[in-house]
Length: 507
Image (cartoon, rainbow, N blue to C red; front, side, top):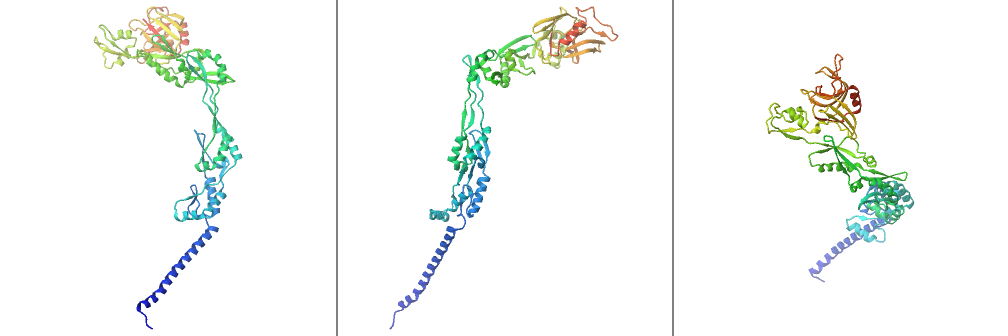
């Protein structure tokens, strides 16, 4: 029986298709069994799933034991906390506070990724999602260790309240609380740790629970009445002008003084002290009160404000004079100008370079150095020597009171004594003047008549042969510019007038 060619072709093609289909099916079955085998190995053994992390610690691909070791190293051994009270920061290990990550429990939790109830979802995330799979650390807290450590930290964290202060308000003094202290609340911090340990471990920050400790004013208020005598006493600054021998007095305003007052307790007794830190700025402000060109010069002595305030003794500053000018008048000579402005002639020449002392044009202007330049040493306040050339007398003052008076001799006309305000600058028990071959006992140098030549006060001189000069001439000008005393007076003055005492010489 015959058949068509089409039917014959179909019969030949069908076996090839079946073989191909069976091959594909076999491969799929083999792959499925392979995947199932891999799953069985992963499900019941094998490492932690890929890309599993505990915070920043990667443990994917590690065995459970290896994962536990890495977690312990990075979370317990190496991790450091920032411990803060809200203002200050310290470093410490969480283990010191009884807080640690349980490495075995955390590793076990990580090992369950892809193996637990959510295994199919987690496996899908492992296969198809490239993001890390985060596992929370298992945190353990030991309240006992936390309490012990926090108690040790009290000395570091806590600070006592500052003592109460005094303020001046509405014309009266009152007690004001000082800055509050700080106390560490150990129990509250432990409770916070128990509730938020995982948060603290992940963030790396432990915020201590603290409470303020107020400053009490009760003790100071009780003692305030007995302090009012001193509190109401002014702190006085005295400006002394040694050229004019005059004083100006400034009282520190009570409101400003209150900013400097400190209360210190000794044996339960309040003591008042002044903080001197702001005093220099106050002294600078005094300069603006002087409108005549004078300036404030501070002596090298310590302020000692507390002692001065308690005793009512003022702090004294020296007032310095500025340089001035002089208009030459008809008939003026350099010597007459020197006497009029009370500055040695050589100093005027030095202040006016190029000046011809023999030719002083009328109407020309000369620069006159400051009279304060004649007082190079710190001024001794409270002592002063006053010399009257016309009367040939010397009066010695102490604390504004005359205590001694002496007959003297000053310079002759051709070598006169310079009037002005000077200062004891040196002590030489036996000075020698080579120009006149004189020995001058108890010599007090007070000004340079010309550079390098010091005029002064001394006792009756002697010539090299031993003859004493001018013993019967005291009371009239006989010297070459110095001021002469008899020997007992010169010795007394030599011992009384230390360097820095002001010497004023009047015509």
